[in-house]
Structures are given as structure tokens and as C-alpha cells.
Image (cartoon, rainbow, N blue to C red):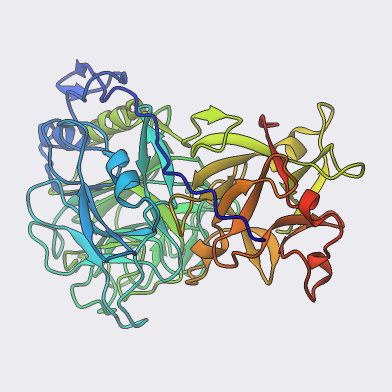
Length: 518
């Protein structure tokens, strides 16, 4: 008899709202607390520097101290109803609890990322373009959980095929007009596909020639340009070229950067531009390039058109992946001093991976899952295999290596396909989730396929053996996470596959929720 799913509405603890800050030379440079909203946001700093924001997008926090409007809109799958997610208080953090409540028992996607600048430059579902059809996919609203200043929030997880755009903007630089931009990305989530961008692009969603874009690119594509090491790199997508410096191709001054939270900046004006970057959790910015426009035809003067893109190239090239948390575009070329003050504000905001407790099945908790089958496996834990992407069980103890302990540690997340169930994110590979494929379990990033959220969602039940918990596949409800010959599957109690063997099935599908090994 199949046990009914253990479904309970997840309640996330919210800490007191906000951040405090101090002013240095009229710009924010001090640290934040979790008790009050910020006295300045990034866009207040840009305005004080004479280069005001003309677009300001974030799903995690307000980017102006006075902003008290919506950050983004979500749509739930159960009835296609939408909800705007705002801030806890003016200048504060996202009201993620409203998303949790609204999406309970179903899944949600992000439909709009609102422009906080007042110019109406909202990002919505990208249409078809010259490189690929459309409309593009929308981001799963639960796939990039974080905390900011101790508060739960969600970023924008771009899987291949996902993209946002605004082709009818107000106030964005065109032609050779100066502008600046920054974005906070997950520096561990990238690929070599074209093109994970945020910034200025063509209004026609087609490639209209060299110099018709100016956007931040992040990834490890080497098709047009590269920096030192193996990547990923912050580069500028200027159309028909990803530039890491003055030359086409490789520029060794642009380093590999992979901070968990990464500040990426590009700015450009008449025959000048720059790339800057830094750790969004601490420290200052570094300048990776600052100088004249690339020494290739079509980029001096520039021919910017003023559309805004996120997660795609200017012609709707949509094969990249990445995660976005916040970003802005300015009118005018920001000074380094202004950008340095913005970086201080970003590091004070308190971005964190979103692990808030240990040893429980509440979302945000770090856990390890211990097998219960006796006598073979009671010291074995569910883990991902470093040799490939498969999931196995193996012995983990206090004498195990740090890598093995981390491989056996998971962060519990709200279920990607049903937020009242669970998904399991790798603790040492952020953005990668436990998922089944052909009934075998793997550790994967979202490949953009429509089945991934369901394949990565499991509903807890009382352990099938009467011990611990069992985890029922949301899209194959007669199958549970099971170890068989030390490899992990979703398995039924009897069936044509060897891993469906009824022998020891109840024990093999029952797991203890243990304190995390890492």
C-alpha cells in the first residue's frame, strides 16, 4: 500500500528586517545590521556620484533606501494567478514569506522583474529573436534560494532556454552615450553557452552589427574572447564579440573569477570602457581592464540601441546558464570611487548561501541522509560521486576526508515542482540538485528541460520500514529514493528493474535525517 505523501507547508523563519549604514564622503561605505533598512542603496550612491540609475532590478532587496514597491512578480502553476513580491519595509529585503505562502503545494515562475528606478524598464519574458525562437522560458521561483542580511530571498536561476528582456525602454544609453552597470551573479553557476548577459542590447532581438550591445557577460565561453586561466570570466558583450580587454581573443589581465557571490561591472563611454569585479561578500573591487575601445572595427564609436536583456544574448541566443540576484544600469560613466562605494554597500548587504539550520527537513537546513539497512549499510550516507555525476552511498565517518564529508551534505530546499515537498541541493556544488533520470539518481544543474523540477522534487513520508523518512518521487509516486548495490535510484516495491526488488525494499528506502557532515 502506498503511503500518502508527507506534505506540510514550509514555514521559514524571518529575522528582523533591514540594514544600517554610515556615510563616507557622501557615499555609503559602512556595514549593515539585520535590524533596520539601509540608509542608502546602490542607486542612491550612483545618484550622489552624478550617474543615476535608469534601471534597477533585484529579486532580493530594494536598491534605493526609499523604495517600497514590488521587486518581482510570480505566477503559480495551479491556477495561473500572479502575485507581486515586495519588500518587508522601505529600503529593505524581499518578502520571501509571501512567495512561500502563495506557492505552497504548487510551483511558481518569475514573470516580471520590476524596475525600481521609476522609468518603467521592467524585465519580462523574452520574445523570439534572430538566433532562437521564443518566447523564452521563465525562471523557477524557488531554484536560487539565498539569505540576504539574514533574510530569506530568491534569485533568478537562468537555465538554458530561459531569458528576460525589455525592448521598449526609457532613459537607457543609445549610440555612444556613456553608461555603467553592475550585477551580482552566482560565480559557481555558468557554462560556455552564449550568452549569460545583463545589460544593453538591440531593440529588435536580432544581431544588427558590431557595437550594438554593451552588456556584462559571465561564463567560460572562448568562442570570441577569454581571460587568464580556464574561466569563468567577466567580459563585455559588445555584439559579435565577448571582450576581455582591448584585443579580440585572449587578454591575460582578465582573471578567472568564481566567487559564490560575484560583483561584475562593465562601463563604457566615448572611446573608453572598463571591466571591474570583486567578491560580493567581502573586500574591494579590482579593475581587470580600463582603456580605449577594442581595436576592431565597429566598436568606436558604439551603436548601442538601449534594450535590456537578462540571461540571453542580444539576438536571443539562449544556451547559457547563470544566476542573477540584482543589477542596475546608469546614465553616465560612473567613477571608480562611486563604484567602490557601491561595492561596500553590496558587501554590507550580507549575501549568504541560505543555509539557516542543521539536522532537520525544514528548508534551509543542512543535513546528511543515513541509510538504515542492517547489517550492510548503517554507517553509509547518501552522497554524490566525484568521479561522475551519479549518486551513491558510502561509509562516512569522522576520519573521512573533507571532500567526502561535503559530498554527503545537502541543503534542504522547497520542492522545485511542489513547494510543499522538498529538493536537495548539494552543499559543495551550489545550484546542483539531486534528481532522477531513467530512474537513477544524479547531481545535476537544471538543463532547461521541462522535467527537471519534477525529477528533483521528493515528498517526505514516514519511513517505509517504520524508521526515519522515505522520499517519494513527485512524478513517480509509487517510487522512492532507494539505495541498491550502493547506487541510488527511485524504486518501486517490486517491478521489472533489478533495483525494484522487493527484498529489503522498505529498509533501503528509509533514511535517517542526520546532522550534516560538513
